[in-house]
Image (cartoon, rainbow, N blue to C red; front, side, top):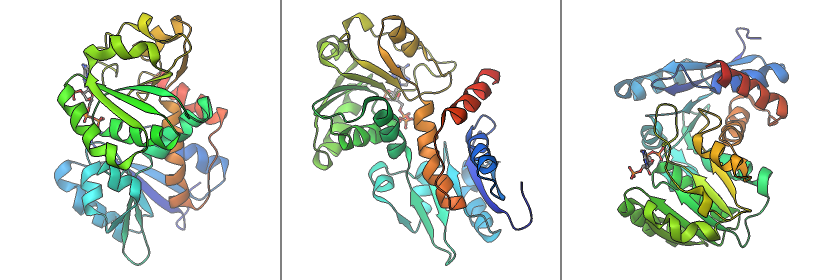
Length: 284
Ligand code: ATR
C-alpha cells in the first residue's frame, strides 16, 4: 500500500533492472502492512550526487546504493559508520531530518549473519577466501568478527591479496596469509570454510577451476554470488557432499538494517522471503 503520506526510499545503481531490493523490501512492506515503497532508480555515474540531492529534497528517507556508486556514496556522506570506513564504500545512505546524510555499510553484517545462521561461531576455524576486491575486504572483517583464527586470502593477482592483507592485518585479530590461486593445493586440506568473493561464477563469467577434491571433507563452501543462486562452485561442492551457503542469506541480512533505517521496523529474515526471492531468480 502507498498513500501520499507513505515513506519512500530508493535503490540507486546502474544498471538497476535486475536488483532484487524492490522485491525484498516490498515483501517486508506487505508483510508488515507499512505505508511505503522502495523505488528502483537507474542513475549514471556522473548524475549520482545531483540525484541524491534531489531525492533528499523530495523527502526520500534514504537510498540503498549498489554498483557503481558505493565509493561515491561513501565520499558524499557527512558521516559514516565503522563498517563503511573500513570498506571505503557505503551501500546505504540515510537522509536525516536536519539535512545530514549518514553513510553505512551493511554488507559485512549481512555476511556475518548469513554465516552465523549456518555455522555459528568461527572460533578456531581456518578459512580460505578467494578474491581481493571490496567484497573480500568486507568478508575478512565479517570472518574475523565471528572469531576465525586464520584467513588465507588467495587471489588471481597475488599482489592484490598481499596489499589487502597488509591493510587489514592491523585492524583484525585473525592471522591473514595472502597468496595466489596456485597456493590452493597447499591450503585446501586445512580449510573449515571456503568463501568465494570473486565475480568468477556470476552469470556469464567462467567459474574458478579449483580442484575441490583437495578440500577437507567436512569443510563448508560459501559463494556470495546469488545470480545464479547455485553457482558452479556450489554445485560441485554439493556433489562432493560439502555443506554450502549461497548468496541469498547475505543479501537478505544486508537488507534488514536498511529496511529498519527507512521504515522504522526491524524485519525478519524468513523462509517465506527466501522462497519469494528464489522464485524471482528462477524466472529472471
Ligand atoms: P568487488 O568489489 O566486487 O570485490 P573487484 O574489486 O572488481 O570487485 O574484485 C573482483 C575480484 O574477482 C578480484 O579478486 C578479481 O581478481 P583480480 O584481482 O586478480 O582481478 C576476481 N576475479 C574476477 N574474475 C576472475 C576470474 N575469472 N578468475 C579469478 N578471479 C577473478
